[in-house]
Image (tube, rainbow, N blue to C red):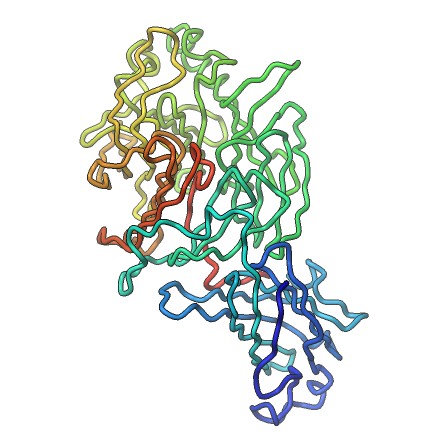
Length: 500
């Protein structure tokens, strides 16, 4: 059970001269606020603070900051709620003169010092301190006590302080770069295909066409996808042109067609646009004079889509086929613009129509079994290069190279020249192999977050933070089974979060 104690020179959060500041105008005196209650959320990282407000119409914003633990490096969790968000989430009850203030990002089993600031219509503000004692979180001990190979190093700037962990156990998980667990919800047990969008988490169900909407106060709602042929979500959700890009399986007349359908959806489950990669490749290969039936095998997971992003620079889609290559598609038409992959694989060796679309690699190593596509701040294509040969080729067909180590790669693409160059790589001494899952992302300031999701025989997940110069900022390990604990990890901003 969580307890709340209020501290500070003025227990009523009132706009009064005795609490500091200049005398407010008379109407602001009617907007007095007092702390009335507290209630635990679904997990210890979330607490609801109840505020009584005489004139709730005077409130324009509410924000809070959670003081970091002594000796930590990560920025404080800092959240600001605008009036529009308060109204949309029905947190401000005008008739009842109450405000439900969700405070999330708390440390579990810790006395959290929280500074609350309330902004009023006349421009005045009031700052008050709260002490929130939280219970321990024992539901998933995986995340509570990582094996710290290298603790967070002070003086090494990353450009991010919090990490979103997509997993197969619970809702999305947020930890800070010191390794402290800061947010977990409840009611969802598969958050592989998930994203932080519009101030909440969205997560696709791995067994049904259901999209979960998980608010930061822990509230969960769900909606079904509008296309009845979609069977489930898998691998990822990522920002699209207007909605979110989702990898989905399709079921028609009871038959499952895995790993080749990409859909752009919105938060209400509406399907805005979709691309069938089997149909796209079948047409391209026929047009190029090849028989596609040996490669495009609808029920054999021949493509295995595991990542897709929208490139706003030229309105294109970049899609990862773990079995074969990275493919660039025109967003509107679905036309294949180029392929980048291992030339030792079946697609390149057996099909001239696809070989003609392949970029020539002028330096470095090709993507092999890759995951987690992104556009790096310098405009290059970034991905986690798993280094794992194909798993679902026809019997006797070449599966490609099998380097036996994983790396992070960035590629400069010259589409006009038809070339690609690996311009940066991080190989970790070639001593770590995560054969499946995994991710790597770089933030604007140059720091990178790398997730070896299935290292050491799929028994350990490893999170590594690097600064812009490649210096190690932290290195944590977690137990896993295959890659259930941290399927994918991405930077997320809980340090200056504005919800409006």
